[in-house]
Length: 172
Image (cartoon, rainbow, N blue to C red):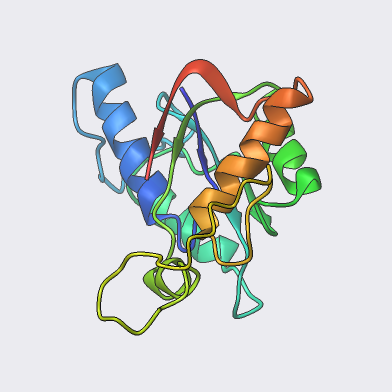
């Protein structure tokens, strides 16, 4: 399957996906034998990572090494950029042949996910008491990164370039 992680970080989620799909396709655990000449390019998933790199750096070499030491296929592409960018989403689709993904799986970093939620109204609960229903079609500045991604995916679908296949799965 083709798998996208739009908030990839160190690609741990894609590493787990590669491991699971490798087991599912072979029925056996990948070998870590040193004498095994497998470069990790065998069966499994065709994944793409997008990382905004708040620290300004994505260590692609270490990420690829994490996959290869486990005899797993590394991501087809590790894109440094913002998944909310139309250009970045198009580049991600191009990395798997130009079409939509079978699966989008992600876990935005807690610092980003939590700090970008709705404004704290100071009453000690997590609800949004301002009454603003956000009736516009776009995401507000207080929406979480996932909500903003959902809005971007909706725009992509309206433009007939979906990020996720019909019947595809999104896990966050």
